[in-house]
Length: 368
Image (cartoon, rainbow, N blue to C red; front, side):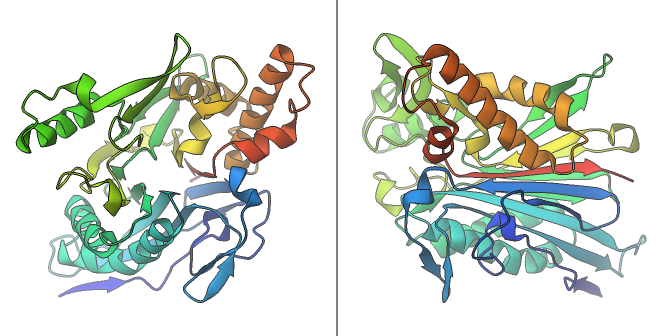
Protein backbone atom coordinates (compact mmCIF):
# COMPACT_ATOMS: atom_id res chain seq x y z
CA UNK A 1 0.00 0.00 0.00
CA UNK A 2 1.28 3.45 -0.93
CA UNK A 3 0.75 6.10 1.71
CA UNK A 4 1.47 9.76 1.93
CA UNK A 5 2.31 11.85 4.96
CA UNK A 6 2.15 15.55 4.17
CA UNK A 7 1.66 16.70 7.73
CA UNK A 8 5.08 18.31 8.04
CA UNK A 9 4.48 21.39 5.95
CA UNK A 10 6.19 24.75 5.97
CA UNK A 11 5.11 27.75 3.91
CA UNK A 12 7.01 30.97 4.38
CA UNK A 13 5.43 34.38 4.86
CA UNK A 14 8.18 35.94 2.74
CA UNK A 15 6.98 33.83 -0.17
CA UNK A 16 3.57 35.49 -0.01
CA UNK A 17 1.76 32.16 0.27
CA UNK A 18 -1.97 32.88 0.31
CA UNK A 19 -2.50 30.63 3.32
CA UNK A 20 0.13 32.09 5.61
CA UNK A 21 1.24 35.50 4.38
CA UNK A 22 1.75 38.02 7.16
CA UNK A 23 0.28 41.44 6.52
CA UNK A 24 3.75 42.94 6.89
CA UNK A 25 6.43 40.38 6.04
CA UNK A 26 9.75 40.93 7.75
CA UNK A 27 11.95 43.04 5.49
CA UNK A 28 15.00 40.84 5.85
CA UNK A 29 13.23 37.60 5.05
CA UNK A 30 14.57 34.59 6.87
CA UNK A 31 16.67 31.46 6.77
CA UNK A 32 15.19 28.13 7.82
CA UNK A 33 15.40 24.38 7.33
CA UNK A 34 12.77 21.79 6.57
CA UNK A 35 14.41 18.39 6.30
CA UNK A 36 17.78 18.03 7.91
CA UNK A 37 20.63 19.39 5.84
CA UNK A 38 18.84 21.59 3.31
CA UNK A 39 19.04 25.24 4.28
CA UNK A 40 16.59 27.66 2.70
CA UNK A 41 17.22 31.39 2.46
CA UNK A 42 14.42 33.58 1.12
CA UNK A 43 13.54 37.20 0.61
CA UNK A 44 10.85 39.20 -1.20
CA UNK A 45 10.63 42.80 -2.43
CA UNK A 46 7.48 44.52 -3.64
CA UNK A 47 9.17 46.88 -6.10
CA UNK A 48 6.88 49.09 -8.16
CA UNK A 49 3.74 47.62 -6.57
CA UNK A 50 4.43 49.43 -3.30
CA UNK A 51 2.20 52.13 -4.78
CA UNK A 52 -0.76 49.78 -5.12
CA UNK A 53 -3.48 49.30 -2.49
CA UNK A 54 -3.90 46.08 -0.56
CA UNK A 55 -5.38 43.08 -2.34
CA UNK A 56 -7.93 40.56 -1.13
CA UNK A 57 -7.66 36.84 -1.76
CA UNK A 58 -9.50 33.93 -0.21
CA UNK A 59 -11.09 36.14 2.44
CA UNK A 60 -7.87 37.84 3.57
CA UNK A 61 -6.06 41.10 2.93
CA UNK A 62 -2.44 41.26 1.74
CA UNK A 63 0.04 43.93 0.76
CA UNK A 64 0.01 43.99 -3.01
CA UNK A 65 2.48 41.80 -4.85
CA UNK A 66 2.13 39.58 -7.90
CA UNK A 67 5.01 37.27 -6.94
CA UNK A 68 4.04 34.39 -4.67
CA UNK A 69 5.42 31.03 -3.63
CA UNK A 70 5.37 28.22 -1.10
CA UNK A 71 7.90 25.91 0.51
CA UNK A 72 6.79 22.65 2.10
CA UNK A 73 7.69 19.01 2.69
CA UNK A 74 6.01 15.85 1.49
CA UNK A 75 7.03 12.51 2.98
CA UNK A 76 6.39 9.71 0.48
CA UNK A 77 6.26 6.09 1.64
CA UNK A 78 5.89 3.24 -0.83
CA UNK A 79 5.40 0.07 1.18
CA UNK A 80 5.10 -2.06 -1.96
CA UNK A 81 8.63 -1.20 -3.03
CA UNK A 82 11.71 -3.34 -2.44
CA UNK A 83 13.16 -0.23 -0.83
CA UNK A 84 10.33 1.01 1.40
CA UNK A 85 12.34 3.81 3.03
CA UNK A 86 10.52 7.11 3.35
CA UNK A 87 11.53 9.88 0.96
CA UNK A 88 11.20 13.40 2.28
CA UNK A 89 10.76 15.80 -0.63
CA UNK A 90 11.30 19.52 -0.20
CA UNK A 91 8.99 21.29 -2.64
CA UNK A 92 9.44 24.96 -3.50
CA UNK A 93 7.39 27.08 -5.89
CA UNK A 94 7.60 30.60 -7.23
CA UNK A 95 4.98 32.29 -9.40
CA UNK A 96 5.42 35.66 -11.13
CA UNK A 97 2.04 37.16 -11.87
CA UNK A 98 1.21 39.71 -14.54
CA UNK A 99 -1.90 41.67 -15.52
CA UNK A 100 -3.13 41.15 -11.96
CA UNK A 101 -2.48 38.95 -8.95
CA UNK A 102 -5.22 36.32 -9.10
CA UNK A 103 -3.48 33.72 -11.28
CA UNK A 104 -0.33 33.86 -9.16
CA UNK A 105 -2.13 33.52 -5.84
CA UNK A 106 -4.44 30.78 -7.12
CA UNK A 107 -1.58 28.75 -8.56
CA UNK A 108 0.54 28.99 -5.42
CA UNK A 109 -2.37 27.94 -3.21
CA UNK A 110 -3.22 24.95 -5.39
CA UNK A 111 0.36 23.68 -5.76
CA UNK A 112 0.50 22.94 -2.06
CA UNK A 113 -2.93 21.34 -2.11
CA UNK A 114 -2.36 19.20 -5.22
CA UNK A 115 1.23 18.00 -5.03
CA UNK A 116 0.64 15.31 -2.40
CA UNK A 117 -2.03 13.66 -4.54
CA UNK A 118 0.09 13.92 -7.66
CA UNK A 119 3.12 12.20 -6.10
CA UNK A 120 0.94 9.34 -4.84
CA UNK A 121 -0.78 8.92 -8.21
CA UNK A 122 2.66 8.91 -9.86
CA UNK A 123 3.88 6.18 -7.45
CA UNK A 124 6.73 8.40 -6.31
CA UNK A 125 7.95 9.38 -9.79
CA UNK A 126 8.62 13.11 -9.37
CA UNK A 127 8.72 13.87 -13.10
CA UNK A 128 5.33 12.26 -13.66
CA UNK A 129 3.99 14.03 -10.55
CA UNK A 130 5.12 17.39 -11.92
CA UNK A 131 3.53 16.67 -15.31
CA UNK A 132 0.23 15.86 -13.61
CA UNK A 133 0.48 18.86 -11.30
CA UNK A 134 0.93 21.31 -14.16
CA UNK A 135 -1.89 19.70 -16.16
CA UNK A 136 -4.23 20.15 -13.21
CA UNK A 137 -3.11 23.75 -12.65
CA UNK A 138 -3.65 24.55 -16.34
CA UNK A 139 -7.23 23.36 -16.13
CA UNK A 140 -7.97 25.26 -12.94
CA UNK A 141 -6.53 28.58 -14.20
CA UNK A 142 -7.75 28.42 -17.81
CA UNK A 143 -10.57 30.90 -17.19
CA UNK A 144 -8.36 33.60 -15.64
CA UNK A 145 -7.46 36.74 -17.58
CA UNK A 146 -4.46 37.49 -15.39
CA UNK A 147 -1.44 35.25 -15.88
CA UNK A 148 1.52 33.80 -14.03
CA UNK A 149 4.76 31.98 -14.61
CA UNK A 150 5.39 28.92 -12.46
CA UNK A 151 8.52 27.19 -11.27
CA UNK A 152 8.33 24.15 -8.99
CA UNK A 153 11.68 22.81 -7.76
CA UNK A 154 11.78 19.54 -5.81
CA UNK A 155 14.75 18.38 -3.74
CA UNK A 156 14.98 14.60 -3.21
CA UNK A 157 18.04 13.84 -1.00
CA UNK A 158 17.33 10.10 -0.88
CA UNK A 159 17.67 9.77 -4.64
CA UNK A 160 20.23 12.62 -4.74
CA UNK A 161 18.18 14.46 -7.35
CA UNK A 162 16.76 17.91 -7.93
CA UNK A 163 13.74 18.20 -10.23
CA UNK A 164 12.74 21.48 -11.85
CA UNK A 165 9.50 22.18 -13.72
CA UNK A 166 9.52 25.63 -15.28
CA UNK A 167 6.81 27.48 -17.19
CA UNK A 168 7.67 31.01 -18.28
CA UNK A 169 10.74 32.96 -17.20
CA UNK A 170 11.10 32.25 -13.47
CA UNK A 171 14.31 30.21 -13.45
CA UNK A 172 16.31 27.93 -11.24
CA UNK A 173 20.07 28.53 -11.38
CA UNK A 174 22.87 26.33 -10.08
CA UNK A 175 26.18 27.82 -8.99
CA UNK A 176 29.36 25.98 -8.06
CA UNK A 177 32.77 26.98 -6.76
CA UNK A 178 35.54 26.56 -9.29
CA UNK A 179 39.18 25.55 -8.66
CA UNK A 180 40.00 29.08 -7.50
CA UNK A 181 37.14 29.21 -5.03
CA UNK A 182 34.98 31.49 -7.17
CA UNK A 183 31.35 30.72 -7.96
CA UNK A 184 30.28 30.16 -11.55
CA UNK A 185 27.03 29.18 -13.19
CA UNK A 186 26.95 25.48 -14.09
CA UNK A 187 23.29 25.16 -15.06
CA UNK A 188 20.17 27.26 -15.57
CA UNK A 189 16.64 26.34 -16.62
CA UNK A 190 15.68 27.79 -20.00
CA UNK A 191 13.19 30.63 -20.19
CA UNK A 192 9.92 30.09 -22.02
CA UNK A 193 9.84 33.57 -23.58
CA UNK A 194 9.95 35.39 -26.91
CA UNK A 195 13.76 35.40 -26.88
CA UNK A 196 13.97 31.60 -26.71
CA UNK A 197 14.43 29.95 -30.15
CA UNK A 198 12.50 26.81 -29.22
CA UNK A 199 9.58 28.85 -27.92
CA UNK A 200 9.58 31.03 -31.04
CA UNK A 201 9.53 27.91 -33.23
CA UNK A 202 6.46 26.71 -31.30
CA UNK A 203 4.64 30.00 -31.86
CA UNK A 204 5.55 30.04 -35.55
CA UNK A 205 4.15 26.51 -35.98
CA UNK A 206 0.86 27.57 -34.40
CA UNK A 207 0.61 30.52 -36.80
CA UNK A 208 1.24 28.18 -39.73
CA UNK A 209 -1.31 25.64 -38.48
CA UNK A 210 -3.95 28.38 -38.48
CA UNK A 211 -3.48 29.56 -42.05
CA UNK A 212 -0.52 31.90 -41.72
CA UNK A 213 1.60 29.62 -43.88
CA UNK A 214 4.36 32.17 -44.54
CA UNK A 215 4.86 32.98 -40.86
CA UNK A 216 8.44 33.04 -39.64
CA UNK A 217 10.21 34.27 -36.52
CA UNK A 218 10.40 37.87 -37.78
CA UNK A 219 6.66 37.91 -38.40
CA UNK A 220 5.81 36.61 -34.91
CA UNK A 221 8.30 38.28 -32.54
CA UNK A 222 10.53 41.35 -32.54
CA UNK A 223 13.31 42.79 -30.43
CA UNK A 224 12.57 46.05 -28.65
CA UNK A 225 15.00 48.76 -29.68
CA UNK A 226 16.13 51.84 -27.79
CA UNK A 227 16.89 54.10 -30.72
CA UNK A 228 19.37 52.01 -32.71
CA UNK A 229 20.41 50.04 -29.61
CA UNK A 230 19.03 46.47 -29.22
CA UNK A 231 17.68 45.93 -25.70
CA UNK A 232 17.69 42.14 -25.61
CA UNK A 233 13.95 42.21 -24.81
CA UNK A 234 11.73 40.37 -27.29
CA UNK A 235 7.94 40.61 -27.64
CA UNK A 236 5.14 38.93 -29.54
CA UNK A 237 4.02 41.28 -32.33
CA UNK A 238 0.31 40.67 -31.85
CA UNK A 239 0.00 40.77 -28.05
CA UNK A 240 3.15 42.75 -27.15
CA UNK A 241 3.78 40.15 -24.44
CA UNK A 242 7.27 38.94 -23.54
CA UNK A 243 6.06 35.37 -23.01
CA UNK A 244 3.26 33.04 -24.02
CA UNK A 245 4.02 30.13 -21.69
CA UNK A 246 2.07 30.70 -18.50
CA UNK A 247 -1.08 29.86 -16.58
CA UNK A 248 -4.15 32.01 -17.18
CA UNK A 249 -3.70 34.70 -19.85
CA UNK A 250 -6.91 33.70 -21.60
CA UNK A 251 -7.03 36.98 -23.55
CA UNK A 252 -3.62 36.27 -25.13
CA UNK A 253 -4.75 33.00 -26.71
CA UNK A 254 -5.39 34.55 -30.14
CA UNK A 255 -4.87 31.11 -31.69
CA UNK A 256 -5.75 27.91 -29.80
CA UNK A 257 -2.73 26.76 -27.75
CA UNK A 258 -0.83 29.99 -28.39
CA UNK A 259 -0.64 30.18 -24.59
CA UNK A 260 1.36 27.11 -23.61
CA UNK A 261 0.86 25.49 -20.20
CA UNK A 262 3.27 22.54 -20.51
CA UNK A 263 6.44 23.07 -18.46
CA UNK A 264 9.98 22.13 -19.30
CA UNK A 265 11.06 19.54 -16.76
CA UNK A 266 14.69 18.93 -15.85
CA UNK A 267 16.47 16.44 -13.61
CA UNK A 268 19.76 17.37 -11.96
CA UNK A 269 22.02 15.15 -9.86
CA UNK A 270 22.96 16.52 -6.44
CA UNK A 271 25.51 14.07 -5.09
CA UNK A 272 27.52 14.23 -1.90
CA UNK A 273 30.48 15.63 -3.83
CA UNK A 274 28.28 18.47 -5.13
CA UNK A 275 26.87 19.51 -1.76
CA UNK A 276 28.70 22.84 -1.88
CA UNK A 277 26.54 23.92 -4.84
CA UNK A 278 24.16 26.85 -4.38
CA UNK A 279 20.71 26.71 -5.98
CA UNK A 280 18.81 29.93 -6.70
CA UNK A 281 15.10 29.85 -7.54
CA UNK A 282 13.60 33.21 -8.37
CA UNK A 283 11.13 35.32 -10.24
CA UNK A 284 12.79 37.41 -12.92
CA UNK A 285 13.12 40.50 -10.74
CA UNK A 286 16.47 39.14 -9.55
CA UNK A 287 17.68 39.20 -13.17
CA UNK A 288 16.89 42.87 -13.77
CA UNK A 289 19.44 45.63 -14.12
CA UNK A 290 19.72 49.03 -15.76
CA UNK A 291 19.13 49.57 -19.46
CA UNK A 292 22.14 50.29 -21.65
CA UNK A 293 21.51 54.03 -21.19
CA UNK A 294 21.55 53.45 -17.39
CA UNK A 295 18.25 55.35 -17.16
CA UNK A 296 15.58 52.65 -16.76
CA UNK A 297 15.39 49.05 -15.51
CA UNK A 298 14.81 45.98 -17.65
CA UNK A 299 15.55 42.22 -17.67
CA UNK A 300 19.32 41.76 -18.08
CA UNK A 301 20.09 38.05 -17.67
CA UNK A 302 23.25 38.48 -19.74
CA UNK A 303 24.68 40.78 -17.08
CA UNK A 304 23.01 39.48 -13.95
CA UNK A 305 23.80 35.77 -14.20
CA UNK A 306 27.58 36.33 -13.87
CA UNK A 307 27.05 39.18 -11.41
CA UNK A 308 25.08 36.89 -9.10
CA UNK A 309 28.09 34.54 -9.12
CA UNK A 310 30.34 37.41 -8.02
CA UNK A 311 27.86 38.40 -5.34
CA UNK A 312 27.74 34.81 -4.06
CA UNK A 313 31.51 34.96 -3.65
CA UNK A 314 30.90 37.68 -1.09
CA UNK A 315 27.66 36.58 0.58
CA UNK A 316 27.32 32.78 0.40
CA UNK A 317 27.99 32.53 4.15
CA UNK A 318 25.69 35.39 5.14
CA UNK A 319 22.78 34.61 7.50
CA UNK A 320 20.30 35.17 4.67
CA UNK A 321 21.85 34.83 1.22
CA UNK A 322 18.65 35.75 -0.64
CA UNK A 323 18.38 39.01 1.27
CA UNK A 324 22.04 39.79 0.56
CA UNK A 325 21.60 39.09 -3.17
CA UNK A 326 18.73 41.60 -3.29
CA UNK A 327 20.73 44.21 -1.40
CA UNK A 328 23.76 43.77 -3.62
CA UNK A 329 21.61 44.00 -6.75
CA UNK A 330 20.17 47.31 -5.54
CA UNK A 331 23.62 48.67 -4.68
CA UNK A 332 24.99 47.60 -8.06
CA UNK A 333 22.27 49.48 -9.94
CA UNK A 334 22.50 52.51 -7.70
CA UNK A 335 26.28 52.83 -8.06
CA UNK A 336 26.10 52.57 -11.86
CA UNK A 337 23.30 55.12 -12.07
CA UNK A 338 25.06 57.58 -9.80
CA UNK A 339 28.25 57.26 -11.83
CA UNK A 340 26.41 57.84 -15.11
CA UNK A 341 23.81 60.38 -13.95
CA UNK A 342 25.03 61.99 -10.71
CA UNK A 343 22.83 65.08 -11.01
CA UNK A 344 19.52 63.34 -11.66
CA UNK A 345 17.12 63.79 -8.76
CA UNK A 346 15.99 60.16 -9.09
CA UNK A 347 19.46 58.60 -8.89
CA UNK A 348 18.55 57.23 -5.47
CA UNK A 349 18.06 53.93 -3.71
CA UNK A 350 14.38 54.82 -3.29
CA UNK A 351 14.01 55.08 -7.08
CA UNK A 352 15.57 51.66 -7.62
CA UNK A 353 13.45 49.97 -4.96
CA UNK A 354 10.20 51.52 -6.21
CA UNK A 355 10.90 50.98 -9.93
CA UNK A 356 12.15 47.43 -10.29
CA UNK A 357 9.84 44.45 -10.51
CA UNK A 358 8.49 42.35 -7.65
CA UNK A 359 11.17 39.99 -6.34
CA UNK A 360 10.86 36.56 -4.80
CA UNK A 361 14.17 34.74 -4.38
CA UNK A 362 15.01 31.50 -2.61
CA UNK A 363 18.51 30.13 -2.14
CA UNK A 364 19.12 26.49 -1.22
CA UNK A 365 22.35 25.19 0.29
CA UNK A 366 23.38 21.96 1.98
CA UNK A 367 24.53 22.34 5.56
CA UNK A 368 24.79 18.69 6.46
